[in-house]
Image (cartoon, rainbow, N blue to C red):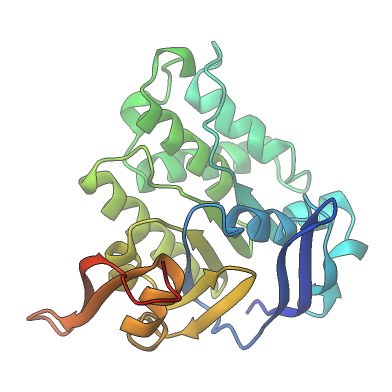
Length: 263
């Protein structure tokens, strides 16, 4: 099981503080956590700090080990980060790109084992048909799937995924979230996923972290974290929380918030 503990986290760009006073713990092993909030609020900076790719104040620990004190190889074995940017459109074929991503981190694995993991990932993501296609000939959505394969093949304890479904249609979005959920449950790890689609997150994430200006507005089960009040504070819109016929909560947005103080 994997334990993530965040205490008094502060993220700044130069003299500009992006996020502050963030304390998050008690993440349930085997869970998918949606990271939500408006554009520019700091979701990407938050994930980059967790990945050890951006400076921060406070403490981030994985299984009791402070993030800053982990070597590059130790961190890369434990945590894998997928940025918003798509893999470069090179002449490298998808299969080679995924194998290379695994070998770069998993020096402990034999060549045969890496190839077996790669085969399994292409099957899990249902992308075997593009395995030997150059990235330069792929659509944005196909390259995004290859980027996700490069993360999954490493078998990390924690996946940090920044908008992993942004270039995908609805069918592929659902497929990706199902695969991530299954992997996380099997490994009893964690996945933190930044998403813009609130209802997609409400339906497929076990819990949500909702960011507003300067910090965390709420954290918890979707039904409790995304209330009309929190929707208003984060996005400056008025809306309602409803329940579908299957018992899942979803948000209906009625319009821009015109209440003074939320404009």
